[in-house]
Image 1: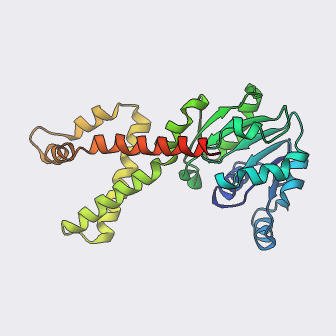
Image 2: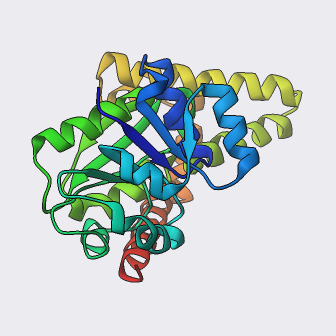
Image 3: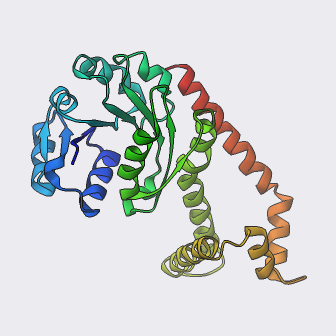
Length: 267
């Protein structure tokens, strides 16, 4: 089995590492690039993986996962570029960093895949979108897909759609948590204990998500099934429409997309 290196052992880097281990990937086929001795010792003890510096990880691996902050990408690429070689696969999970930017900082012939993950990967329920760089073929995308499947679903998209993906699924968990938080606060305002309101809202969210996923029914149809004429749900939805909640979501996601474009332009 090929050797995979994960450079960047923060929350998302460890999420992918732990997901691969749970999915049955042998620890001796994984390397982690980490400079901090205490963090290296922690990861070695927890996952029985080999932890080395970034250069050693990039030199030894067939596939390199770059899981660092966008502002650190150029620095890390400058560090590892001298040991990268044609035929390697470089998978970047840095938000807003284009494959073209990465390709200008690594040797010719490196296959680059850009990924937009999201935080539900922490519970193996992530949604990752992947896009190929100019030197990628289907085998490279298959490899990236197989790695990311360890923490959830994977969807292939053209790179020009990545800013929209970032606005929808990348930032999406924050919108959901915002709505959940608002519903819990409303429950408390209506007289429920906070623990009761929290359980009601969270399970309603989980159940609604399962209905969407398992039935394949359009959300408009599911919404209509809950909305009796002149009933309580209809009264609530009328208020949401009066406050232009749909328009607010569109405006919010446009802002997220535009910020993603700005990050890419500045890379």
